[in-house]
Image (tube, rainbow, N blue to C red; front, side, top):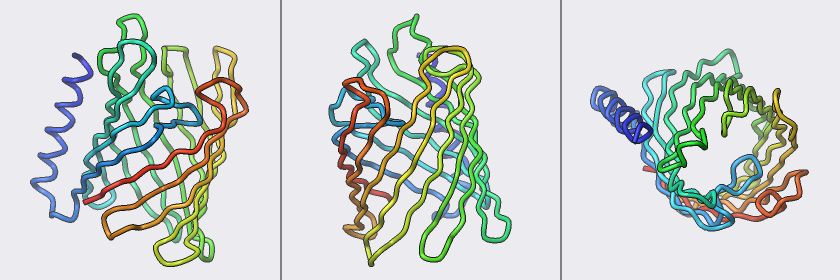
Length: 224
């Protein structure tokens, strides 16, 4: 209930900002995926997910909400993320600094799934491609296991009209528990229309579990 109230408050704030902003500063997204994969791990026990959100921006400032069903083999029904950030630029480099709250609906009371992360990222064009790097810090990661940092390098390019290729290599580290791991993904995107896109992506990690081994996910997304 606490998470739901937080999400509703964030949604109300987002729409309040949206009403003061011009129409092009608000976007909505709705998608379906064959497997919701986060940093190499399936969040839906290798089952499909329906996802959607709203984003509001004004100049370099932005915020939003995003939600998805999840399956952790317990009572948890859904994930709702609320975030706010700033995207300043310096020359060709675009920076992204954000605070993200991950909330879980109907999670067991003893699970302590909810957590904060703080993001610092930068990206820039290099010829026909875009390359970037990011770091995410959480003072009390998922399951309240203490400090955690995720590092990532990523890149993308468009080999032809409507087509894109992208990938990322990341390292998830933990200060207080064992279990650091590496994850990577590579995928091909296609713009079906101006608003609808498809992404076929391969994910893998160096951890051998049923929900972290190699997998391919197909995602269809509508953005308006």
